Each structure stands twice: as C-alpha cells, then as structure tokens.
Amino acid sequence: MIEGLYIHVPFCDGKCHYCAFYSVPYSREKGAAWLAALKREAEAARSEFGPFAFSTVFLGGGTPTILPMDQLEALLGVVGRLIEMREASVVTGVSPVSTQEKKDAADTAATTIEWTSEANPGSVDGDKLRLMKSAGVNRISLGAQAFDDGVLRQLGRRHSVKDIYAAVEAIKSAGFTNWGLDLIACVPGVSLEAWRESLCAAVALDPAHVSVYALTREEGTRLDRDHQAGVIALLDDDEQLRMLDLAEEVLGAAGLPRYEISNYARPGFECRHNLSCWRGGNYLGLGCAASSRVGNRRWTNAADFESYLTAGAREEEVLTPLIDGVERLIFGLRMAEGIDLEAILLACGLAGSPQEAAWKKTLARLEGEGLVVSGGGRWCLTTRGRELADHVAVELMP
Image 1 (cartoon, rainbow, N blue to C red):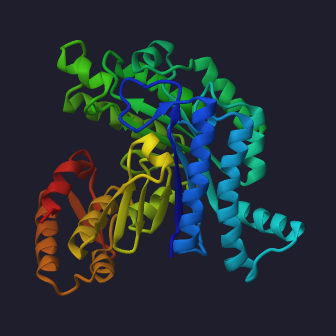
Image 2: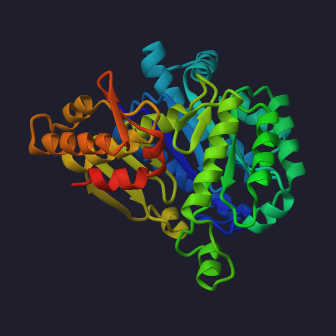
C-alpha cells in the first residue's frame, strides 16, 4: 500500500544562498507546461499503482504558493482526483458517480488525510489559503527561517519579518490550526541571545510545529562558494550544539517537545507524512526531481525541467534487505521514539541473519559509550547520541 503522496513543485523566485534543492524560476508558460506534464505522470501512476490509499499528501518545492490562483487550483485538482480515487475505493467502496458523492468523498478526505503544503511569506495570501483549505489542504508549513531582516538578507531570502507576520495572520484567518514554521539555526554572526529572540518570536505566534535546521554548506550553493572563497566561516561543532540545545530548551518549555532531531511539535501535531517516510513507509513522488518508494523499488525523476516535460528519464534502484534495514535504523533513530530492532529485522527479512548479530553487537557497544539506550524493546539515541547522530549512523553501516 502506498501511504504517502509527495509532489515536488519546482518553481521559485530565486535561489536562497544555502539552497541545493532543484528549482527553476517561475513563469506562467513554465507553470502551464509543468502542470500538463504532472497530469500525465499522475495518470500513468494511477494506471500502474491505483487504486491508492493515501493517508498523507505533501506539496513541497520549490514554492507551491508561487503559482497564481488558476494554476494553484489546477495543482490542487490533480491531488484531488488522486484522493477521490482513494476515498472511492477505501471509504465508500464504489466509484463516486454524482457531484454530491464526489463532494462527500472530498470532505471525507479532508478529515482523514494529512494534506500539507509548504508556503513562503510573500507568496501566500488569504485567497490562496482559502482556496487550498477548500480543496482539502489542512496543514501549512511556512518557511519563515529567521525573525531578523538582516539575517534574512544574509540567507538570500526575499521576504521580510513583516511578511512572516502577515502570512501567519492569513493562515489563522483562513482557519488553519495545524501549521508550523521552518527556522534556520547556526547562522554566522548571530549571537546566542539573538537566536533566542528569534525562537521566542516564533513561539509567540503559537505554531503547532517548528522545524529547526542547522545551516549547512551544500555543494554548488552560493554559501558553498562564499565559504570556499573565505568570505564566510560557518560555526564550529561546539557553537552549533549550543544553538541547537537552546532551540530544544526554548521550544520544549513552550510545549513543543523534540520528536525528531530537527523537528518539534505539540503532541498530536507531528508531521505524519515525514513520520511514515522515516519509518520506511511507501510513498509516491510526482514532479521533476521527486523520489518514490514502493516495496523494494525506489526511483527519482531527473532533476531537469525540460526533460520532465517530455516524460524524461528517472534513476531506479532495487533496495536490498540490507540497504532497507540500514535506512530504517538510521532514520528511525533520529526520532525520539527510536526503533524496534526486532520489527525492522522481520520487515526486511534479516531476522536470524549475521547482520542481526552485528547490529546488536554495535548497539550494545554504543550503549556502553552512552550514545544509545535500550528499554521496552526499543533503542533510542541519548542526548549525547543526538549530538553525534552522524557518527552513530556510520557505526551502524555494514
């Protein structure tokens, strides 16, 4: 069963200095061509994998909300038809044939499916938010990144702090209660106290979810070029840990406990789409550069806009039991809930294998080093283990 649907919207209004995600500048002509290609890919997926039983939908990018109203409505319609298929097969047991039955199916989807859309301050407004909500979107992830105009400019963002407040007001006015903010930590030149002020500003808006990502240098980005040229120096490991520890302190005190290394949420508002992926669930990705996983198959569409318009190539691989197991271990340990090793071994067909003994030996050693802890049939990272999560991941690789 395919639990999640991800659609990569490739458009943006310019590259942020740290961004390595695939994107292209938006134009109306490109938007129309991309939507036509997306509809074709969705139809092909329905023929190959349908009927679907999605429990989560995620519109990411790029910037989905950069689309004008008519093209945004068309995008929502592509998802709506896929969800309608799900509701027909899972909820009603038959294909909806009347307008009322289709509306009932869509209404049911809105209450049973977590449907997230990313949004950027400055590209989202009340009209777009009301359109999304009426289509079934029930969760918004807003790319705030910082509550300081100077830091936003340093990051190459094209919105202001004022735009963040306006976007949050529009989100609330449109009736969204499940919404969150993305923040970037560890920005050079930002003091610990200034970072605290940004965190407190975010908390004051009362989000249900906050993601905190440490600024990292990705190959090919302006940040990477500036770093190599000596224009900018990133924080060292100890400085980064202090920033991230402060985020956990401030957000936890505000009722947003850390449920994954980079994510915090009020209980019950964790991102179900991401949780499913981290636990090894199946998901379908549509759009250029989008990845999919179905069973032991994984593929990624080419990160090339023109190629995507003509049903371009994709890279495919077959997940071996060992690769599947490694990924479930590594991503699972990033979550506060940790992993059930026995369940992973059974799911991957590795129970009783030499790899089972090897992992148990490694986990026991890591426990002795204070990086993981076992209890109740589960393994979890300790506080120190979260700080050295990359090291733990390397240790668990065969």
